[in-house]
Image (tube, rainbow, N blue to C red; front, side, top):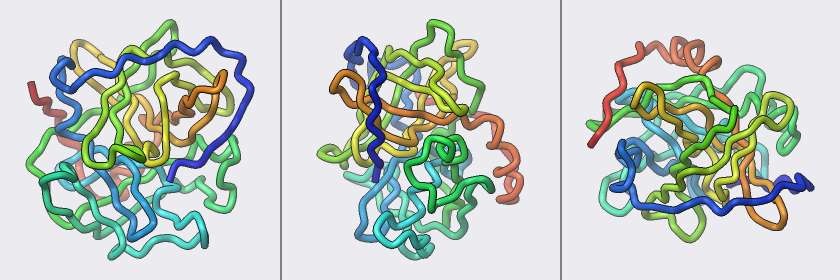
Length: 235
């Protein structure tokens, strides 16, 4: 459910290296799952608390009708190939997000949502931080069309400012990548610095427009009536 935004960036695209999660110092795959929306597709979502996941706000709206999905139509699967689905009992969309402005660059910076699960997940959770965009690299962990059963890890992708509070990463994006975490390291630990909001093209290659999340996270988290827990990482 990743909408396409085509732009002439005039960038030299560097192909991102794709490696298994075992090649990463921190096993991000343990925290990243698939959010299913009825029969209308899926997005990527990440555990930020043992019963809360982070994803893109537009994933909660039917792209055909514009209607918000009912809670009964949402399911989170941490391991789609093996684990059972967990229901969603509450959702919270960034207050500035406007679903009728789908695809407009000015709306992307608010494309953030939290979902409270109908049960806890005994898995790793990931902390959030501000992005580093000065000569920076990032990792994206995502599901997408054609690989809905296993998350893909793309490492060493350039991350740079774009416009309207939105960043650009040269990690490849495709349908289903929406909500995927963009990860950097801080003091030797993996942290989420943004999430994938939209797909763009640079020199004919699929890249991603991504949204910083740290500033909005605490306010949304408190509104879900949960308290942040220290991040834990699998090794």
